[in-house]
Each structure stands twice: as structure tokens, then as C-alpha cells.
Image (tube, rainbow, N blue to C red; front, side, top):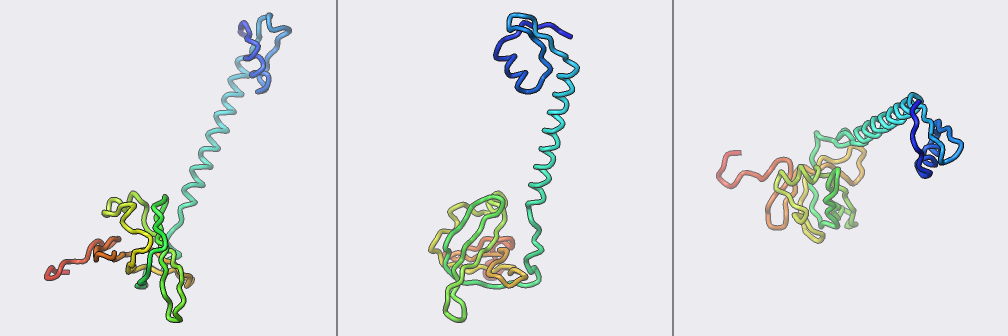
Length: 173
């Protein structure tokens, strides 16, 4: 056991945390069982470690696979950009596409992360609402209106995507 001169606030905090504080008055020496305190601190750090491990594991599990996309098929979509979301963990293009029946359908197209897109030459302003684009996607296997971006052709003819720009006329493919 060690003896300390207690401070009223410290005494209140220690007692509220369940530490074994034994004092008759604030003016008397405070007796602290450091072995017990060490065990409580070890327990607190252990609990924190478990919480961090669970959180990190959950974050890793939250990142999905690309199994929902049919990577054997490609679908070409021509439409007008409703919204371009430059967000983590993946950017998204919301594309309004006119179907064979003449009705407009909103397609949700998943892109790479903003960091990955930036390395491919994209910027947050590369695509804007109102742009008329052509997107080639790997469609969702379940047939819903969505997919994973392969390449997009912008209004100025520039292309962005995993394949990079197509070869220029006369260049070997």
C-alpha cells in the first residue's frame, strides 16, 4: 500500500470508477491498493483491445466482394448522369437510362474508391450531373438496375475506367 495526499476531485473520480479507495476524510492520507488498481487497468486495456479487434474485423467484413456482379457479361448503357458520388469506400454514378419501353430507369453503377480513381486520372468533377455518357458495366447477377463500372465515355469522348483509354486510330490494339 502507498499513501498519497488526496485531492477531493481525484477521490470522487476514483470512487466513481470503482477503485478501492479507503479514506475517512479528505484531509487524511488516501490508501490505494496498487495491485488492485493494476488489475483493473489491465482489465480496462484488455476490454479496449477486444473492442478494437471487433471493430477492425467488422470493418473488414463490411467491404463486400464483387461476386454480385456478372464479370462474364458486359452491358453498355447510354444515359444522363443524375449524380456522381465521390465517396468512400466506392464512388457511384447514378445514370438515368431510357429503356426499350421509353421509361427512364435509374442505374446505380459502382466505381472504384476515389483514391483508385484518382490514380486512373479521375477527379471529383470528372463527371457532372447532366452529362450524357456511355458506360460499360458488369451487370448485377440478379438483374437489378446496377453494375460495376468497366469504362465510361464522357461527352468530350474521353474515357475513364479500368481498361484505360482505347488505342488511338492506327495504333495496335
